[in-house]
Amino acid sequence: MITKLSHIGLLVRDQNQAYDVYVNKLGFKVHTDVTMDNGFRWLTVTPPGQSEIEVVLSEPVEPMFPPELIPHVRALLDKDAMSGGVWEADDCQKTYEDLKARGIEFIKPPTKEFYGVEALFRDGCGNWFSLTEHPKE
Image: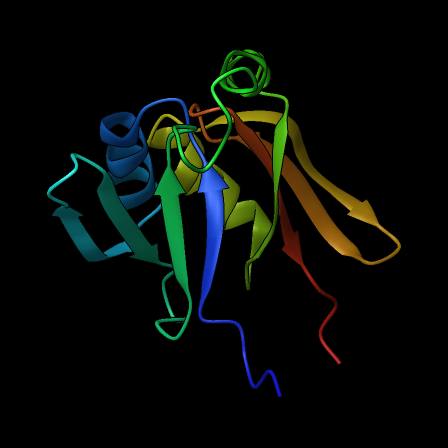
């Protein structure tokens, strides 16, 4: 029986760039950063306040992808066309201002939606995300 999700993979163009964005701009903590004997780098970060889940920042390489698919995946990353999910914030407007000041590119400013306040941003590594503040109950 599955009991929980411990890791989630996120494809990025470049792991060094992703390290900088996720750690220095988004405020994530490095959990693991090791290079294996075969040269594969295992880089995981945890979101602030959620240390029980690790985000694996991976470049599209073999054996994860067959060689003929890697250029296609990289083309999507190069166009910032991969979607990574939804990050939650207590105060979307303040988080938007903080992240924008750190160089995060937003494609939609905080806007009131039926599910709360949402902004959309690119991580600069090939992905876009929703930053959402849910209504207070």
